[in-house]
Image (cartoon, rainbow, N blue to C red; front, side):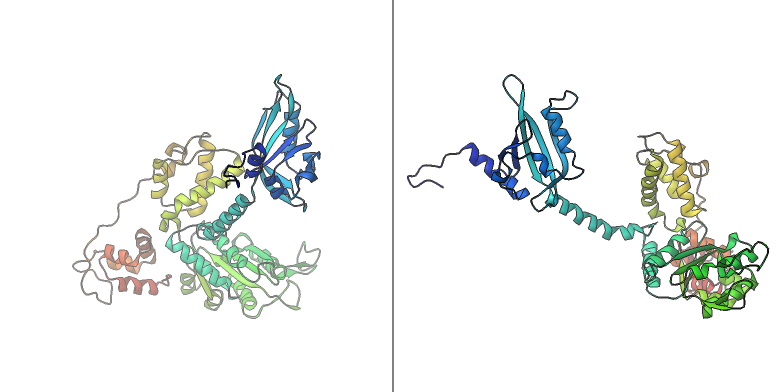
Length: 475
C-alpha cells in the first residue's frame, strides 16, 4: 500500500528475504547463522535472535546427511560439488521434533574465489509427507482387491472369493478349501486366519499327505514317552500347539479311513488323546482343511467319510484355476516381478506383448505355482534392462498352441429331462454330461459360464445345472 504521502514503500533486500515462502539462512565458514528469515522461524520455531551466531548443526536430526555435505562445501572439497540440490532430510525444531525438510545450499565466494559462507534454503516438507501418507492409505484401500493376503486378482471370480474369505473369517466354523494343485489354497487358509478374531494366536500347518498314518497321528495329537520306538519323551501334537488359534490340514483327502475316525472326534467334540495315553485332552482350535480332490466324489465312492466331509465343509471355499481368470495374469506377472527383483537383484524391464500373449493363452495346469516358476525362469534367462520376450519363457509356455473350441450348434427350444442327443444338440452331449471329467472340462473351456457351456453343447442351462448338482460339483 502507498505511504501517507502517496509514495510506495521501499523494496529492500530485507523485505524480500522475509517475504520468501522458503526458509533462508546464511552461514559463515564455521557454519554459524548470520542471517535468518521469517520463514525459518515459522519452520523451526527459533527466532533470528535465538539462532544468530549459533551453529546450524544444532538443528541436525539423527541420520540427516545434509550436515556432512555442507562441511564439504565449507572446506571447498574438490571431490564434492559446490552446491546441494534437493537433499531430503529432517531438522529438529524448537520442540525437539524431527520435521521433514528439503535442503538446497550454495557456497558463497569472495571475488578471489575463496569460500566465505553458505546460502541455504529450506522447504517445509510436512505437507508433502502428509500427502504421501494419504496416498499410502489410499493404496492400502486399493490393494486388497489386487493383493489380498498374498492372493493377486481383480477378476470378478477372485473378488467374490475375497468376499467369501472375509465372511468365513467372521465365524468360527470349519472351512473346507477345494481347488487344483497350485491355486493358492494355503494362502486362502492363512487369509481366513489372518482376518479372524484368532489372528494373534497360532496358525499351525500340517501336510497330511506327506506323513504316513502312524507319524501323522503323533503329529496331530502328540505322544507320551515310550508310546513307540523312538518316543524318548512326551510331545504335544499340532492340535495342542494350535490351541486358541487355527490348524490348517492340507491334503485332507489323503488320510486313511482309521485316521478319519480319529479326526472326526476332534472336529465334533474338540477332544483327542495322545498316542499311548488314555487321558482325554481338549483344544479350542478352528479347523481349516484343504484338498485338490473332489471330496464329494470320494464320499460317493466310499473313500471318505460322509459325516467328516460335512463336518469339515461347514463353510466351503473353491479356489478357481488360473485358466478361469486369465484377466488376472498381467497383474500377477507384475507382482511376481517385484518379488523377484528384490530376491535376485536382476532387473528385466517388463514383458513384451508377444510373451504376455503366450502367458495369456497357456492353460497353466500347475496354476499360480507354475506361473511363478515361469517368471523365475524368465528372470534367470532375460538380460537386465531388457523386456521379457517369448524366447525367455519355458518351452512348453512359448510353444503352446491352443486347441480350437468345440463346434457351436444352436440350442433347442425345449429340453428333455434326460441327456439329449437329438436334433440341435451335439451327438456326444449325453456322454459329456454323464461324465464328471467331461463336464468339468466343458465348464473350464467355457470360463465357468454355465450359459456358454450349455450353448456349446446345445442344451439348456438348467440341464447343465442339474448334471453339476448330480455330480456334486460346486454350483
